[in-house]
Length: 294
Length: 297
Image 1 (cartoon, rainbow over the protein chains, first blue to last red):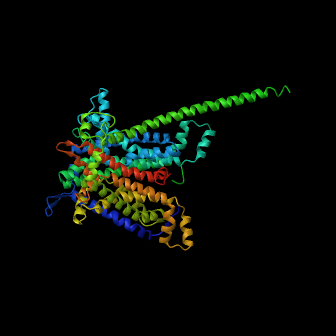
Image 2: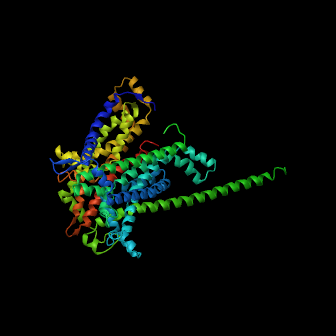
Image 3: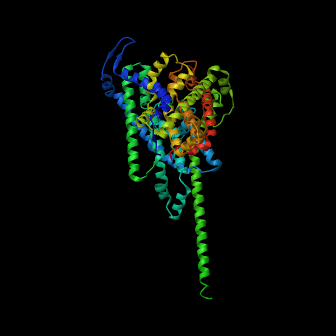
């Protein structure tokens, strides 16, 4: 769409800008402010420069948390994206079945995050949970409070349960936008099921998948409530992700300087990875399908 | 005469072959259809099983939950729910959560609508940078803003009010709303605007009377997302409230006491937090298919 050059558009932006500035810029400046100072109390503070940043970057437990975070985010992306596409292809296209399936699939997305943790806690406990008891009956000593592998597997299963619907619904709406004529043409050409997917459906899904992958990456990188309720970060610190580390540091221990430096690094990592994802996907799309409009 | 004879069997044969092929195809498509149904059924079971278990436990007494393992409540009880609805601390949690969620939806949508219109229709100095900056707020982990928010709202006297949480959630909800609405607005042709201006509409009249009705499904979908992300958030809402505006999510942590965890009440409270979601999704069910692509398919 050809847009009109008009700087009065700023007037339309202004209310939004003031509000977001209040809830984003002021707090962010506070964080920057803390990150370069050592605050003892309201009146005593010293300028420390980059000291906190160096301390954070060299902290072994934080490096471990960061690695754990990346491992988690990429694992769930690798499972949820293909699974979500698969589910979207399976979903009925019209009628009451379509809306029933839609409502059921959307359910996990609308449950408060700590309740998701509680649901899975109830579901996986060895004494009262269906899954916990079921696996123990099969002869495996399943225990998420003792065994890090079990804890990891459960948290990933929980995240797949919680967020695959988002990818599935995004892809479903992408698929709904493909005109029937495309499928008819494919039938005339006797295209195989795979060819239909590869050359008709997948290209149409690129846009929604970009949204899906970015949203999923961002949210999984900020995950807090679900593992906090389910495992409390344990056993040991095997499921302690970045948000929980930061919350403990900032609220629990009141280490203002280090936690502020940590916050900034954390934020920058997310921005960087999102930017890399976005550029990579957009470039590969540009090479694959030279389309005028996006 | 004889020349035409062989053609008849040939065409018959052809027809028969075509019919057989169609039959085969139908048989194949019916097996694939069943395979699809079974796979989808398996996935839906996976989605519903944990929720069923929550329901199951919410209808049991604590002694039954811990004493015996059963696939459905043996002594069906509503005691857990009655406990919640008779305790003001509990049910006010729901009221508080709904209050700040609705407030946030109202604030976000009313500032996001004009902003999204500006982004979709005009170029102006710094528009691209501004849009990108907005999206970066979507990526800001709430944990980063915990401490500054606490101090900011404390110093302006908003701590432990619904407004504080509603404003804090604007951090990610306004950018999200602008992003979604911009997609929907850009799919409305610009000629609509121009025609309206030629017909003598002023900008506000055009915007409210013509433009908004045209993107109402987009607005519905946006409200759905705003509700969703404000309703499910725990970290900010818990940090910014103490007693007067405490959300249900943080009240639920109260179920763990010295004598152990009150599983029944926890489950019942959990079930009750799912219900508003079901209501909302029921209303937008016909728009989800299109709306989830955020107007960008």
